Length: 226
Image (cartoon, rainbow, N blue to C red; front, top):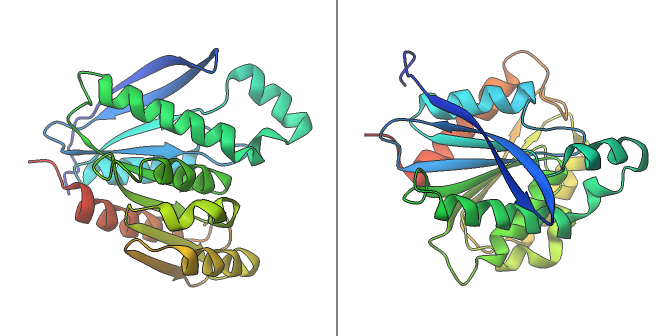
């Protein structure tokens, strides 16, 4: 852990599907891995929960990219329709697009990539990971926080990246969904249920535990900063 770590953080912007999307790139000096955050419904790169986890990963020596998979206009429409949050095909396509950008960008092209997905974003992350099944060196690890991996059920057997599913102990319905999805995964996998935690991990200490588990998983498969 490096509490005095200086992260090179800057805003980025790219065009995917003819819309402009924004993200926050946090580069850790000497990092060998980068974690792309795939946000769930009603969330984005300014999510306090994901920014907390991102900081913990950075302290562990990992670079991060918190990225909005929907444009500002799409977000406004989403507030009324609620349709795009469950459009896993669209979200996964954009995750794949962002991954391609990371591979081409001079600052990140040498970094090993992992996905951290929350809520419906976890399904998009797993769907995207499955699309790289014939390129196993592209996505090396996936972590789901309170996710809906069941929404990518048909693709789970194709995921080759080691996958960790984290669920709150009080999130009973989502626990069952994750257990069903877990049985379909064929890659190295673990499921962790955090006692006393609800769906958003708002209870004292529970988000810290999420960050610890995620950091350990990513460091195992992505490596740390020198």
